Image (cartoon, rainbow over all chains, first blue to last red; front, side):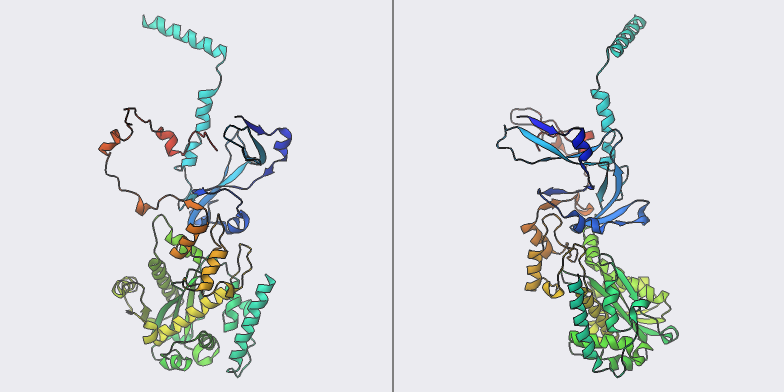
Length: 155
Length: 347
């Protein structure tokens, strides 16, 4: 099977700028959610915990959050599959339905901090970059030359 | 929303007509401007003006005599058991020698008071000269949203703790307002001895009595109970739903789990993702069970009290990954595990 991601410059520009929430819960379901009336309505600032800290609740569980930006050099995309695949081997097609530059990050009853798993994961793009970027011939030659120098010094 | 308001206004008119039969003087106080509750009919609009997902505290003006003479203060609550709506804590106070005023109001009546009778007494407390000159009161409306979020904290906060904190908070605010408190009478929450001990630790100079059915025994507690009950009744009457629902208050019933109207409300107004409007106390087992039946499952981190205590590395750690064929199942690297990062193969 193949997966086609259907977005180009035009679709990218047309994509709706979305209001996205990162929630500290696993939900076993897929479908529409009345976020505006049941959730966004109740977001409040909680300045006693710091500048920009927000409070809300989800099914009675207390949440504390803040607005965060997507890491620099990246952007947030929402891709949606409009047609269910016929079988496991069918081709799939995902369409761009929205973009976001920032999102609201929520913790369960804990003020957001650098100890949060999400913040800890932010260095990963840099790690991935270091691991995955192509090596130019020039760099390769320099490395070979450096190895020769080391060999000479050790004899 | 306008229909909702019309219904509320009509009901208030009925209450007012009932009261007017007993009143000789017409009530012409303009309550909207002052933010003060000077009669029964000012109570609903006052509550409607507050945010119902947060707690609201109201203190009446303190009669001058309550600052000079030693006073007794009663504490009681309304709406402890319902799955819908706020819990309201109420206090009421008057000089030790003002038992006559309490009797005249009807607080010494040993009979169970009806909602209508309570409304009349509440109105009298705020309009009759013999009452306003020596009786003061205060309430805290504890939002169902606050009840749920307190009980679902990582460090659990039980309903008893919420109750005691509210009672002590109101007593402290009465002190700060200048009330000369000598004696406190409280309807108990949990074991009376424990509660009394806690109150004495906080207010060592008062004579404190914590008793079951204190509202039947002590008229000043009965007055506090009336203030709390009338406030809760009106909070439900004027409840507006930020969720955009238009629900008249008789459509969700008394709010108690045993009420069939309330049970139907919990069934009909479930949202698959968010559960219920925040009129509901999510932490009640009645609400939890209704969600388990019909809404999507949702899973949060375990609260601190349920996490296992660290007892050192278990010996079985070195064996658990081994299959029958002797191969070792590799665990995910801790870097990725702690950061909730994983390779996605299916979606």
